[in-house]
Length: 348
Figure (cartoon, one colour):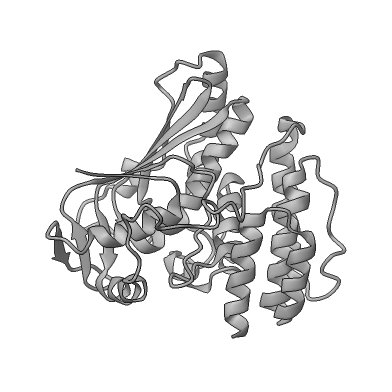
């Protein structure tokens, strides 16, 4: 098994690209084209999981999509329309064009007729040494079918999450059966699972610990990998001065999802924010009239400005105005920088 101990996802991507250069990979066919698969499971240990933003311009990750998807999951949503506003390709993963079968948030919060997140929080508050806090996403009844049965195009790739508190920090281990390294593991997964970890830690009143990702089949799509590797081939992944990121250079920092505000109101603030985003998406004018007050400053100072910026860029085609709005209103310097760089590349 390969183990990669990294500071953050920015470092993980460049180390992961290097791993696929060696002899420990095999070619494999898939429904979406040829892949290269690492021959053994790969474990990635994030020492600073809240440094979740990817800054490699060569990867050109859409930070608006990554940010919103994390909150969409925490809200227990499974609808196609809201998340595909940020990424049109998401529609191809729905069986009916309305919902996603394998949506993590739905499976966390209501799929198994229980809110697993609330139950785990309750257990760990009662017994911080509890070892039974397993968050399930894989449903063997619906997901594990015989070869002659019709299956969904959207099955959970990540299957379980383990939570435990040690030394007043919440550690999290995520198990994944099939992990696309570029788009999934060191892209969207690093964002939405670290947001899940921070949410759980905030609700428990403890600090964020280590995030460990175990990928049973870590793979890349051959053509995508080749193109990205060529763009980043000049980076030495093991130099003591590389791969530097805005985090390690102290240019940016993460904005906490939880402060001293009322944690009991966080979920209601989240639902209000998701409803507000739906209104932004469906209303063509007066895009700021729906904004309401939030108890937790994360929504006022980070979440709302980011989706308003997206509205200006995506719907109103006013990308320069979007950049100015982002600079004035978004207090999360990491997300603000990534969003600004991504928008600037769209202008160029």
